[in-house]
Image (cartoon, rainbow, N blue to C red; front, side):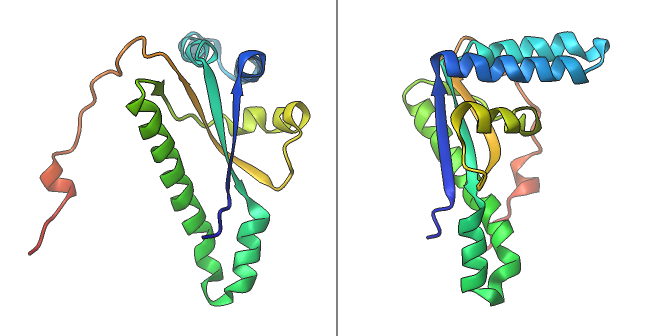
Length: 155
């Protein structure tokens, strides 16, 4: 029950500015060959209604490591697992209201901006971004490994 997860929800001008920054960063670091496709994707994120930014509060994890030294090496793994649970629960909740979302990882491109723009505590480590809004198109079909190759049941 460490409650180390934190979130920031940005909408309106803050949401637009966030993705403008990502787009400028990607333009500066992406080859011409790959840029057009990346920009198409980033423009979709910028045109979303808002973005949820997911963080871990590192001092909370460090405190837990000190409190439980025998499990110290496990806390980073548990932190990531707990963060994934929060993200999938938020995604599922949004979808239950007919809102679409995707999970992105443009952390390097926006870390500095977050501190300047939103006065984010240095203790908050950015993990992911979830742009959300109206569903305009359904995701493309994906190939999946057959379920019997991934799940086994023993009774």
